[in-house]
Amino acid sequence: MNPEPEVSAVRPFLDRGRHLGRVPEPDPFDPSLQGVRAYTITSGRSHAAIHLEFETMLQATPVGLGSAGMLRFERAEIVRLCLDEPLSVAELSARLRLPIGAVRVVAADLLHEGLLQAFQPSETVADDVLLLTRLIAGVRAL
Image (cartoon, rainbow, N blue to C red):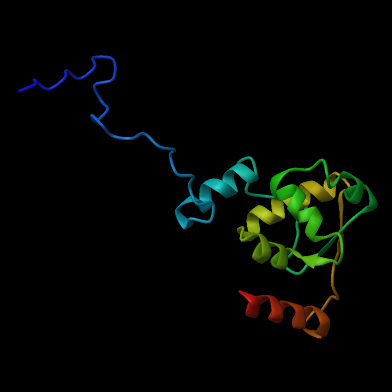
């Protein structure tokens, strides 16, 4: 009968015979990670330098169009989404699956850098039929 081999003193924490595989990547859309993700996206800021309403429409500027390839992560995605058509802050939040506060902070940064331009819809949003139909369609898509 063979005696059992000794466990290495270098790695006593490893189980004998256990295969070490890759550690699975965390799901970025895991609800328990959303607060951490929003914190990192905004660099810990909770207020934007420029106040943006839910219904503020954002569109990429020519400078933003030229810079789209150099941006990364959520900043690049916001500019990319706003290239073809103006989108509201609320629509961006829904499409990116990010808290609206995080979208406001990043969009305000992009506005400040001249990569986006903002348009306020009519003073009485209730009269803006196009915006309301787009918001309803966005909510239905969720």
